Length: 157
Image 1 (cartoon, helix red, strand yellow):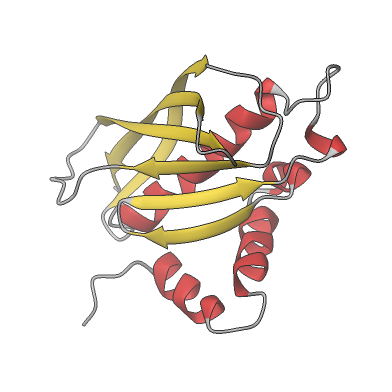
Image 2 (image 1 turned 180 degrees about the vertical axis):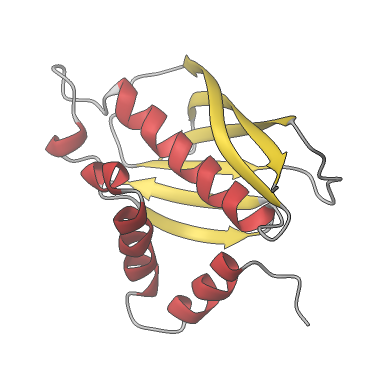
């Protein structure tokens, strides 16, 4: 029996298909519709890790033509949430975002890639604040944004 979450199993299934990343990303955005506004594509997913990209298009621009601060926050939360959902043992625990601290380090004038990672293995407890660091990089591989997203992990009743 595999320890992989249902989400990671679905990821592996979709990855075998043409445009699998895009289809999987669409399915995630169907489950959480607000994320669809920025048209993200999930690039990689495994326990403790998720990466995703948002294209530098007008739909995510602010008034100066760069990627809007809140679009960056949305991408960070998407990446962290998908990673946590794929990592937390779903039969015994649940999670919800509790807070986010961000730093805008540079204007984002290219596509932007987010990476959310936590160290594993992890001992899951009840009423735990799990801080998920997320980093966003432009296409020049420059760090442009960081976030620490606190996920509240509880045991299921």
